[in-house]
Image 1 (tube, rainbow over the protein chains, first blue to last red):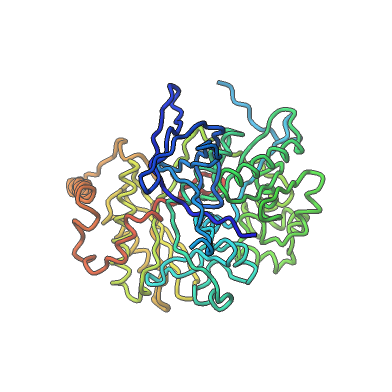
Image 2: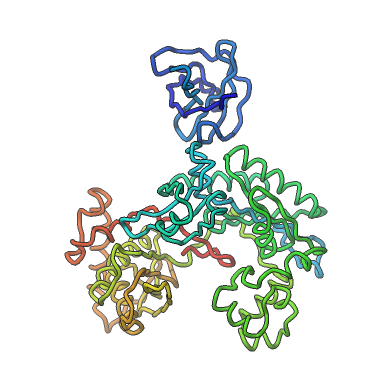
Length: 89
Length: 431
């Protein structure tokens, strides 16, 4: 079984501020310019990212039917990007 | 507002439950979190070799297993582990993680007293709460630190601060240890007396000469004998050993009162002459004086700290005639102390200046008819002007002529390390 290696990837995120000040990510812009809409935020909590390295507010989001984590650390957003496997290259 | 104080058990109703949380291998854990690729390798956080700060500041569990010790030189550490990963420190990250951990502690109690960046006491005493419930709370904190911060913590649970600190050292990493009134004799008393808070090398040597080798030996030693030999401190240490420590955990609602401000440096080269000391004194005194002014303080006692190339050190202190935050006055007093106490038998490896006996700089002052007070006021104005210039144009915009060739030392005046204040156990003293 190949190890699930991830790297920290900072991304642009469009955020909606709720009346109570809570931030909700609306869409994420990938490095190639493609924008992915966040269909639903399933969970928000403080957590560490052991795979990519860092800690902050962790948003569990549903994007295109897939669940993924987005982290807000200090004043930046990052995702745990999958490292390309050797066979893929 | 009413304040409920913890009352000693034999005199009151509420048993104290105090946690001591110690973040394991703090610097190294934070570095490993940010670089998962090195997590399974021996990692040491080390200062800059070029600036002669090349010692191991912290290491992870893997490095500990191969015998790497905090304080040893980088080259010595590499002899133990050829695959040792050496990383530079990131103090801004450590400060952030220290604060995040503290926020978690504060969600369980308002009485949280930090002890350095990576340790804290948390008083969770509550009428009717048992030590077993204290254990449960400690487990919750341990799990939250691991999940939310990605690092581990060891927690000691006990009925006083000293024993809870001993407890946090017993099981590492990521563990909780309970030292109760029922088990402290079994757990604490067999420990080496050097493990007890405030028993340093010198005190341990003295105690050893009197055949006091364990904490139990100290607890059972004759009180009069200990007082005769070690004075008031001896009595306090004996109380610590017997579990009679009633020192309170400071409330976070009250800002820690600064008791002293100081800076020390290990310069790129050993200091071999009075001229070297003089230059370094001015660098340190400028930093100390600036920080005094920033906090709106003045001090009346100057302390120096010196350590030679064999790492033997001492401290001396002397009073000033007036409260001051003028760097020249602090530097001159420090140089005078050096002249009176140091004979340059050995080169000086590290040197520090601290100002204590602090008072507000805004309070009224008694001026003297025998001194040229105008000169002092002018010197004070000058220092405030220098602060302003440096704030606008950088730390090297204006300097003493004597310091023009000492930029490597001058770096410390604005370094982050200057902000790292260790906090003393009893007084909340910033050092």
